[in-house]
Image (cartoon, rainbow, N blue to C red):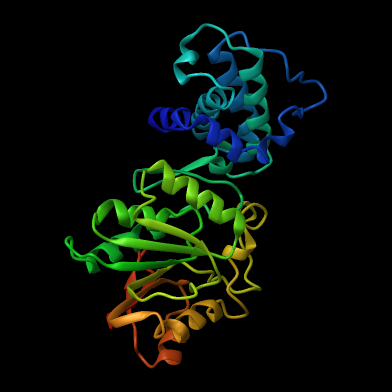
Length: 314
């Protein structure tokens, strides 16, 4: 988290702007007895208080303490202070106020990454808000599968559908130095976040971020990669996901396969000869895709031994 906080600090103005909506309740109280402006007398007092407040919702004392430390570090950055400031014996009223706000948000069930304002993906720190999905370990493995298909010297044109925070596009561009990636998303807010993340890593010349549905108006690509919505409309999701993460990026229609099938149907218009397709899919969708596409795709398992990816090698 120290490295993460330092990265946020170097981009502090952007990070604060990204969190402006989420920090609107910065002056809220956890209870009627808590005065937000009252500073903590020490870092240890703040961490202990935060862990106590988080314990009920998290249910794990050790994890509650770790999250309290992370949130305090993030609070210092959000308040415009260097994280090393936490080595001081006491905390300012501003840092204490932001910390109480962060603890309140996390206690209500808001995902930690949204409270902090960033998430880690394959060692890359990305700005995130509730306008984009929090990158998952399964999607890190999707990038592994993508990289296996791209020769290191390839000067490919790649389309990243449903780019969200830009996680996949950025990870691929950092690993394959000669590719050019076009990331598209239908959410204006997601596009703004993706552009900030691309700028953060100096990839503006190699990644274009475009607002569109699932395909741009024109272009031919050597590979189309996608983490499109694939959760069936009526499937229940964990509360932390359903109440906080964007429905637009989750729900894929009655069966969950509708958006992906539409992408595949239109892909021939945008693929170069022998172009590749690779999708992340739901763990129970293999048979449906096999039947619909008559065994066109090869299927791969994730780290939990569940079918998670499908590939058409052209």
